[in-house]
Amino acid sequence: MASFLRIGGDEVDLGGGRIVWRPGTAGDADGIAFALTAHGGPHLLHVTGWLPGSEPSDLSCSELLLDVPGPDAALDGRIFAMALVRFGRVTERRAVVSLDGEIEGIEADSNARTTVAADIICSVERAHEPAFCGACGRALGEIGAERHEFAGGRLVTTRHASTTCTGCVEALRGRPPAFCTACGVAYEADGMQHQADELLLAYTCTCPAGHTVSGINAV
Image (cartoon, rainbow, N blue to C red; front, top):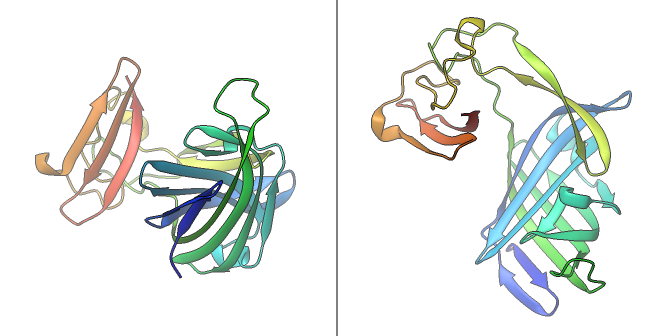
């Protein structure tokens, strides 16, 4: 099976996709908040949502209808008016996902609709949870905060660990991390990439142990 994206009558191959997930609650129900991205040629597809479950395999054979998706689902910046996401077999590492929907026209207030279909083979990974301070390399305690976001039209609460210890809260403002938050090893210059504007600094760093971490720090 190969991944593909069909827009109207045109079909392109996809280079596969990626699902990043973390535990999250919607109301009183425990579940999984996920973000799916896939690309092929000039096209970029993204979908975020929430489904009941505690681990990726619980998504197997599930369906998610996004009838008021807003920015939770879009293709090349064009928002889906409606999308149906169907999960096939899902494991900790791999998922097969199908999507059918309609995207809105490119012009504001356009009533035009274009049908979209996709079959996507995705890698699956849990969202990175920092274990070491990115500024000093010391092990982190239970430092974190709840975040409330809409995913698939539902208000979902997730918990996000801090990337620094309490003594280094301001140390990374406008700077990339100096230490790997996965293992605490110091980054080397050739393993760090970053770019900034007047508000945010985005980085992707790979430590000598091979962990790659991406993120954004405020400037």
